[in-house]
Structure formats: C-alpha cells, structure tokens
Image (tube, rainbow, N blue to C red; front, side, top):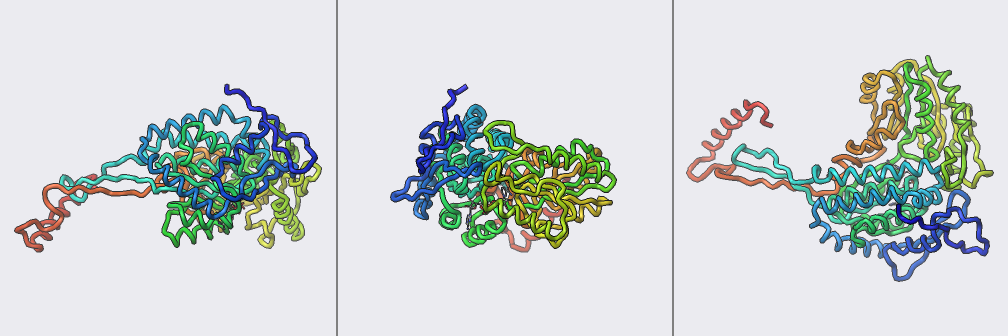
Amino acid sequence: MAPRTEILLETPPAAVMPEPLSSRVAPGRLARLAALVTPVASREDAEVRSPLDGRFVGAVPRSTPEDVLAAVGKARKAQEEWLHQTFAERAAVLIRFHDLLIERQDEVLDLIQIEAGKARKHAFEEVADTAIVARYYAVHAEEHLGPKKRQGALPGLTVAWEHHHPVGVVGIIAPWNYPLSMAVTDAIPALMAGNGVVLKPDQKTPFTALWAVELLREAGLPAALFQVVTGEGARLGTPLIESCDAIQFTGSTATGRKVGRQAGERLIHCSLELGGKNAMIVLADADLEAAVAGAIRGCFSSAGQLCISIERLYVHEAVYHRFVDRFVRETRALRLGRGLDWDADMGSLISSEHLAKVAAHVEDAVAKGATVLAGGKARPDLGPCFYEPTVLADVTAAMTLYAEETFGPVVALSRFDSIHEAVERANDSVYGLNASIWTEDVELGHRVATRLQCGTVNVNEAYAAAWASVDAPMGGFKDSGLGRRHGAEGILKYTEPQTIAIQRGLPLAAPAGMTDEAFSRTMSATLKALRRIPGLR
Ligand code: NAD
C-alpha cells in the first residue's frame, strides 16, 4: 500500500475555518492539482464549492480561449512523439494507472463526493468503471487498430491493408455528474490510439479530473500529452472545437447540438453522449425482490444524476401492487447523508439551481394531478441541495416530467397489460439511451430488448451490466447522441482509417496491347467466375 496522504480542504477565503470535510486530502493538495491546468499568463480564478454544504473547496484558473489554443499546441507537440510508441508501451502506462487508481481510491472517492455530492458507493462506481476501461483498451487497442490485411479487388492481384492513424489531438468536454469516469474513460482510448488530449471538465468538478490526470502522469504518461483547461463551456467550447482534430462531448442534448454544429462546420469527427429518459419494464414473471432492488439502483444512484438512470417505470398489472408496496417501502427507507463514508444510500444533488429544477418538475406534476408515493421534498436539514428519492404515480403527458429529463431522484410509475404496450410506451420518447427489462425468461427479455429504441438495454439489471460490458458499444439512439463509446467504436472514432492497396502483375485496366472492349469482356467473365466462388466477398 502506498502511504496515505493526509487530506484537508483548502483554507476558505472567509476567516471562519469550518470542520474539514475530508481527512484524506492534504493541505496544499488542491493548489498543487490546480497548478496542473495549462498555465496562463494573467489568471482569474474560478471557485469550486461543495454541494454537500456549500463550502469553498478550492480555486482553479479560469482558462481563456488563448489558453485553449496553447493547450492544444502543447498536446500536439507531445503527440508527435507519442505516436511512435508501440501499443505495448502505451498499454504499460494504462495498466500502471489502473493499479494506482485502485490503490489510491480513498483520496479520489473523497474528492468525487466533495465536488459532486454523491454517496461514496456511487463514487466507487466511477473508480470501477475507469479501471475496467483502462484495462480493456490496454489489452484490446492493438486488436482494434493494428494493421489488418483485407480482401483485395482481384484475389492474387490486389493486396489491401487497413491502417488506423491517430487523428492528432482529441478535445474532450465532460459533465459534472461522473467527474472521474467522464473525464478519463473517453481519453483512455484516445491515448491508446496515439493521440494527445485536451480536457475541459465541468467547472463544478475540476479537481477530480485533475487528480486523474496527475495519476496518469505518475503512471508514465508524458506530461504535455494530456492538457486540462478549466472554466465555462460557453467560453472554452468554441476554441476547443476549432483547434482539435476530433471532439468527444458528454452533456445535455441542447449543448450537444451546438457542439455538433460547430464540429460539422470543421468536418471533424464528433461523438455526442447526451441525455436520456430511460424506461424500466417489469414483466409479470419477474423476480420482484431483485426487480425492486434493481429499480432502487436504477432510479437513485448518484441521486438520479446519471444519464442512464431510470425515470420511467412500467410494471405489469399482475404484479403492480406487490411491486409498488415493496418499492415505495424501500425507497422511503433509503438513508440520505453527506458523510465521506459508506453509510449513506444517496447523496446530494449538484447545485441549488439543479435542486430548483428537480423540485419544479415534481411541483408541476403534483399540481396537474400526480400522486406522491414517496419523497417529494427538498431536505435542507441535510444540506443545501438534498432532495428526497421520489416516486410518483398518475403521471400524464400534460406534466413536464412525463417526457423531459429530470436528471434527479424522481421516477414516474405506471402499469401496463401487454408487452406490446410496454414497448410502445418505452419507445415513446425523443431519447433512446438506456432501458431495463426484468423477467425470469431471459430469452423473452432478449427478444423484447431488440424492440426497444435504445443504445443499451439491460436484462435483469438497471444500467450497470451494459455500461460495464465495455467490449460492446454504448451510446444513444435519437436525441441521446451520435457515435459510441466503448468497444471497437469507442477507439476507431479517434483514428483516420487508411486503405493501402498493392497491385501486382496486371493493372486494373486494359494492359498494353488489349483493347478496352476486350478488357471489359475479360473482366465481366472474371466477375461472373468470382461470384461463384463460395465465401468470396
Ligand atoms: P451541459 O451540456 O450543460 O454541460 C456539459 C459540459 O459542456 C460542461 O463541461 C459544460 O461546461 C460544457 N458546455 C456548456 N456549454 C457549452 C458550449 N456552448 N459549448 C461547449 N461546451 C459547453 O450538461 P449538464 O446539464 O451539466 O450535464 C447533464 C447532462 O449530461 C444530462 O442531460 C445528462 O443526461 C447528460 N449526460 C450524458 C451522458 C452520456 O453518456 N450520454 C453522461 C453524463 C451526462
């Protein structure tokens, strides 16, 4: 075990020194992390406050558009060398990062909790996810990107090879809700593919991202290869998109459209991981105990601030009452808390603005006739941004939260009487990110899943099974995004594919002494013959 660093939060600007939130973040630690931001000549600072109690956590530079250009320039220069590293050399860095991350997790779990306000067990999901992605691409990047011999135009005469070149510098714009996962897991395949990275984490959660970048450097990543700029997206997004060679954006659909438009103008690759309004379907034969536990995880992990979390719950009428009784009882029993320990089942929302949005969704629904079965209130006694896990029934299309993403711990519960109806209602959304189906008949679950218009569907799990199966792609249909993370798609997108075809012997045209007409007859006969060779594509 590495020696444990003693951690205290930065001294707040006010004279009052509150109880330190964390005993594992050492004095001066956050200032050292802030120093990793691409240096700026004249700097303004941006404050970071904890949603857990509103206290000042630390300050990071408020980067400027010029800083973004400088960051891209540095990453581009470093990438010229990184590009020549072998897959094995790059993988060694990521495997060291994986091991260090697991060893040092206590410190980053505190940081995630302090910045994002979530319960520790939800912060741990990010550690596990990041480790899984690091191992996967360390092991599989070469298999996805190494040169491959392809079938040539004419067997024996043409030999074709497929190569993948790094695009150069990948810009990553990340949200606050998974400040470790979203900052690093898309960067990992970009780095394995031989690119440099410039990351703009959300302004509310920069320290977690900086912690991860520092760890990557300790694991052996060249320092200049992975740059970080901090500040508002509206100010830094455009210069980043205008200077990078590919852009990976995770956030709201509204911002994603803006990013997509700008990337389209430059004709650079753009991958967009956006919002969701995800449905869970509980079939009549489901194991209800497991389904209720899955629904609790699906609806209330990270206080519902998870793009793949469940906001619509459809239960077969044969088991509706039994499911609801148990689900409501277990929802009411959830322990809310802000301790940096494992005691709480759910933490805080990210900000008072977000709390106001979640509360407004519930108030609108209740004013229009929804029934509150559990929760439905803010909890200022616990912290400025806490909101109870909330279960609503009688939700109708007239209510805002019927179709709009709440992005909070609020679920609308309703019943159905046929699988066809459940599928129709689940698909009745502009979003198509994630869905969940519960049934003892996994063959049936699999068949129903293929009828859902979603990028991931979990059978007998809420979201974690598909999310953690990183050998397979993850992303959204419809307004939930464009492009995919994970699997082959998650790394190929950071490359320029190149086909090299070597022609031997005869040319693909009339050779000297043959007329074009004779060539076309010979070629036609050859094509007819090739058509009859089994297996020839
Ligand atoms: P947001 O779009 O407001 O912010 C996301 C990031 O974009 C932040 O870093 C922000 O600074 C930046 N940004 C803001 N304006 C920008 C602009 N004009 N140009 C470029 N960048 C800009 O998102 P949010 O509301 O903070 O995050 C929550 C949303 O993210 C939810 O809708 C959620 O579903 C979605 N999300 C999706 C996934 C996924 O994988 N599909 C994962 C996490 C979150």
